[in-house]
Length: 338
Length: 228
Image (cartoon, rainbow over all chains, first blue to last red; front, top):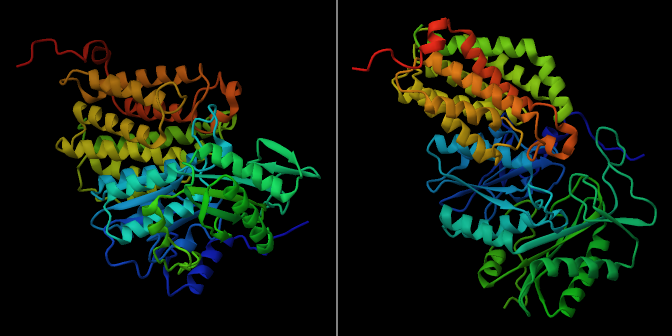
């Protein structure tokens, strides 16, 4: 049986450790439970803040810093942060142009960020929201809350961060974030569930010889189990579903992201990327940027996600802008950037 | 009774007492429709509200003071989502009282409840009929809005409480589309929404502390002679 190297206070302990490790980048408010950027860009008029349940590291704390987030509010494992955390963090970082919340589309996050926004607006601090809902597996008429937010959240944070650094205002950022989120889709697969920290046992059982197609990042089971298949065929099926959902123009440039969900090796992720590029190229699409690594995890889930962002010239330029955070691979190399 | 801090302080205290004595029932309702933490969270919020009331300046006669103390308790000191939503309602009631000369007039009650309802609907994206606390709060807000301007606040609150409880009973008739109960489908029908029950208790608590006579209840809503 797997077990975590953890104490009862895993989340605050990890937060404190992160803040020590990256003390050049972030400050920790241990009382209220949030991190702020030490050296945000001088030209920012609007602060960017995100947050969500813990267990998805490096999301969101790893993206606090110049070029991305001004603050991050981690909740308990897989639980939304409290509205008080979000409110206090927003007050700490808000600028003249207000504060923008980047929120993954889950009921708890929507409500807690919403309550904080009501409080901020009542205090005269302008606050707006961009929802990220990139997961195609949760697209269903019967799910009123809509698609879940997944790894695409990091791309939205990167693009908005660069625009905020360039001095964009709140309305402009909302429009850009909404547009970016609308052009972004993800899908996840897993050959094994994460282990629940409290019990050390798998959150669900994946039958031998099967994979879960369309898992969530909180141990939500997929709606389908498929027989194990060769990697090329699996990635081809995922790419086909993403392209169908996005319906990009022929020859469009894509940011194609491969994301490990917690316990898939880098070696495997690089191999996945190779297949992803082949599947995109075969469809006449251009994999213009190909970030690969662990960006949004689900504790120790044995799985990975693929994300496509249909990127215009402006989006690519914002993606390429420098960022200085603990987890974003930057400065991005600039080979073959057209 | 003056509808200043004396009234709002007594209202919060009575709400705390009512919730303390019904916590088990609330928990039971929530275990059958949600994750079971509503009663505990509501009680925790009110215990914290009582502690904050005790620290208030007794010389402050403003109606908003006790409401603000309770609002901060619900917003800052309580987990889950229903408690903080009550905090939004109390914040708006406090703000509306401040806007009306720091007395809880009928207009302040109507404006504050309407603003609280609007904030809760923005945050929770819930419509009437979704089996949430909106189903109790919306009819209460309507009853307050429709009360003639010269109605005594306690008489208007009695009408609001009646309307809220009718809404609460209605939530037992339909299935949830929002909140945790939405995952249960038809299994949650027949059971009233605990958040809506909480709203009913809030308005009932206000009626408890008033001393309405039969004449008040029969005719208090309309002045007997034309207004000057």
